[in-house]
Length: 484
Image (cartoon, rainbow, N blue to C red; front, side, top):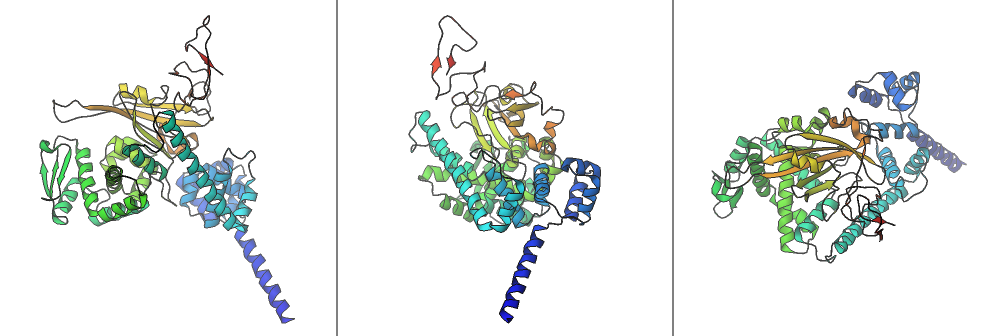
């Protein structure tokens, strides 16, 4: 009899604990969210699709949040909701929702059911999320192989720079150990963004490196045996500062960098050396723009690149590149895509934390605003674009001229582009003034002509590789063929 009473008591406690876990009271977090956005109660209530009185009850913990409201908050304020400290079950539910929203699945799963799955079957939910991530990664690797074969190069014959580029892509352009080590190093240097003088002093005093400013050694040259670092004095201040940071982290964080390279297991020495350079560049950016301080300032300024560059003393390109790396678990930034395009249309840098992926071979879509930006330096251009899958993106592009410091070498000319999905328009100052719902002003772009399915594009250079062309000798449009 006593065993039965204990069993009943245990079951009652279990039911009580499950019930309490399901009832999420988040009044303080909702008030924080509203205050951070300077919103009135009626405005937030309207966005959530509830009455102001219902929101008041939520904020005073008189009612719990429902799964539908949690999903609505995650949709409307993804970064804010993450910052307000959602617990592990909520984060799992969000990850489960993102995985279940893959176009692979025909019907969406209701939010309440996903929330119950995350709460009642967390192990199964985590395995589903992990499997979906593995499926997505496998798809990306197959695309790499397909692109290589279509470009006429064997899948196993990637050039070293291609191997390093793909490594960064598959790492989501975020290296946690290096990012945190660089952030800690910046804190030890005692400045939110270390100055040239501070880094020079650290190199001399802590690392016993002598500094020489001379144009005889190229942009940067380091003699490890003599411990001499030579930097071109003709570089712009932000470029000199970045070169100092690169050499500093490549010495101070050498063990951390080599550990990442060893884990990468790249097949040849050239690839590993290139990865060392790439990781040193990554760590240099993380030193000059420490993660949490940079992310906080970026959100405060709504990702205004010029103002961010002024705060951290970095170049326009360096600032854009850093924004594309903000992928730390629990403190993610806006998912951006970033690329650099030269005068010939070649993409020389690329990364995307969005669903937009760049072509691995050849140039970008000619309708994309980044090409116009190359020809119009020092002017920011903005574009609302739509990819064939129906997703819309806000693109910001700027043409840049990097001086060489001498008449003997011409300056380098290129453009950089940064963009995000329209769901994050409130966080992106360049979206201001755009009609995001307009079908008249949106520009239909593709990834590249080789894989673009659009039939009505006047800028098409050649047909998609998987479609047969049809030619009518008696009829000529802008493009001299059609495709089935």
